[in-house]
Length: 178
Image 1 (cartoon, rainbow, N blue to C red):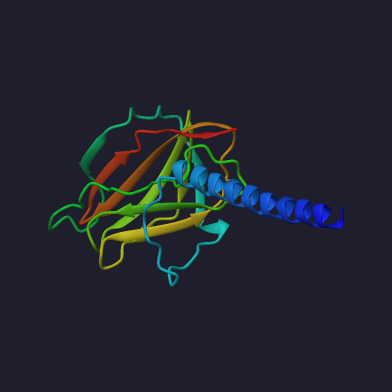
Image 2: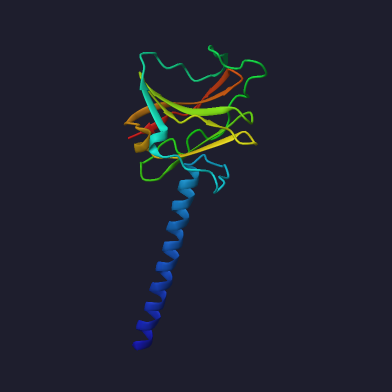
């Protein structure tokens, strides 16, 4: 009888270990499936604080998702080519639950500046404009709270600026916050 109990205990422990492994695999598979972030993020990249997130309310209607390149006005340097259209994972998760930090990536021309803009109706929030590195990349680490985003559907746009010229790309997927 004692042997049978020990046999059952060993099988129970083994079964629990297998269940934990399966659940962990399912969890990480789900996270990977719901995360479009394939970028390798260098550990030396600084993490901006919540104060580096700006917001403005405007009365303009958001534009439909499209790629655009425009000439900026003002006393900026307009000699030289403009930036390449931004690419990258503009948000790491389009359906966040608010418990995991978000990552945004903008790839464009090296030396250009880039920012990520979130639009919901007349409300516009932005991640701080940063200059791209030597490979043309910028990374932001942020949270839904630090960005000041409320519940709803947000259009996500990456904006790159170089030599007084602007290139914008709207993410084809909206950011949905519950």
